[in-house]
Amino acid sequence: MKKITLYRPIGCIELELIEDSGFRSFPPRLSWQPIFYPVLSYDYACTIARDWNTNDEGSGFAGFVTKFDIPEEYFLQFEVKNVGGPDHNELWVPAGQLGEFNSKRVDKIQVVKAFYGDKFSGTKRY
Image 1 (cartoon, rainbow, N blue to C red):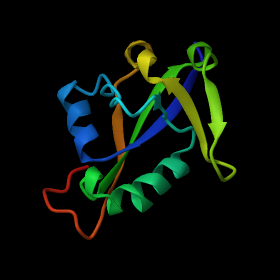
Image 2: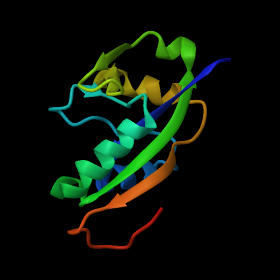
Image 3: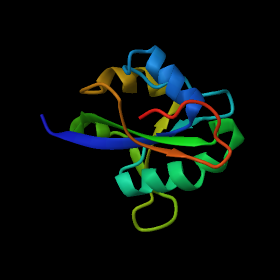
Image 4: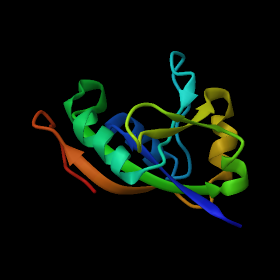
């Protein structure tokens, strides 16, 4: 089975929900979030986590890059959207399919990078 590695930049609240799942699933999307969009590039995920999450109160002024694999055959059923620069590619998964998407992961979700903004308060982890 060929695998595709995806990345998901997240903030503190989403990280806590992932930890609560035993690093087995991403939490359901909120009512105003119709798409779950992991990204295809580690560098792009780092840019979002570092430049956006660390400046966002809703993210707890921290950004984390998560990494996980899914089977290529499953990956291919979703649309890849370019949302800016050459490596700004996102896999657009409809929110209603997130449960199934979580079940297709090959391994646990890993935190591979952490960024903390100047306004972060709390214990730094990862």
